[in-house]
Image (cartoon, rainbow, N blue to C red; front, side, top):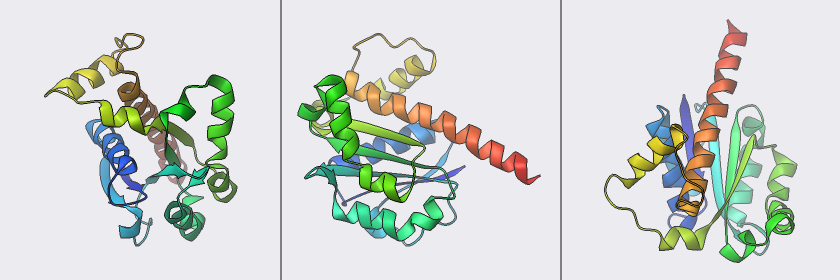
Amino acid sequence: MKILVTHAGTSGQAAGMAERVARVLTGLGADVTVRPMSGVATVKGFSAVVAGSPEHGGCWVPEAIEFVRRNRSVLSRKPFAIFTVVSSQDMDKGAESRMVVMQYTAHVRSMVHPMSEGFFSGEAEERESLHPGERSRFKLRLLLGLLREGESRSHSEVETWSVRLHEQLVRLISRKSGNRQ
């Protein structure tokens, strides 16, 4: 399974989140390419695409919207997932906040329906520092269902979403492969 993980901008929070998503997917056996959207000439040749953007002014940044618009015909025919980096203030208000945050990607969903969406707090990402081996121990605890409630919440949200995304991709892609035979 060959996956493109792409992000708006060449650095920053979306790039960091894209790297984290890619590490989980790679650790689970996927062949992952990480690239800024400006460096993606085509999405053809990938089994799936994961795209991410920071929220700016209540929606994705223009570069990310343009990426989806430019590639929507191909993206609509393959597994496509998105993630958005939002301020921690937007993430802390419960169900009401979730409705507001969902509006950040409404324009994307109007062009291509993503199979999965993740919303992650960028500020928490910056505060977190990992010790050697911590990521591997975390993934093992997550896969074995041993993660305790409240344990490294922001860290676990990205990894949990990525693991679930991988499971969905494996099911979808194997189902498509089975239909072709």
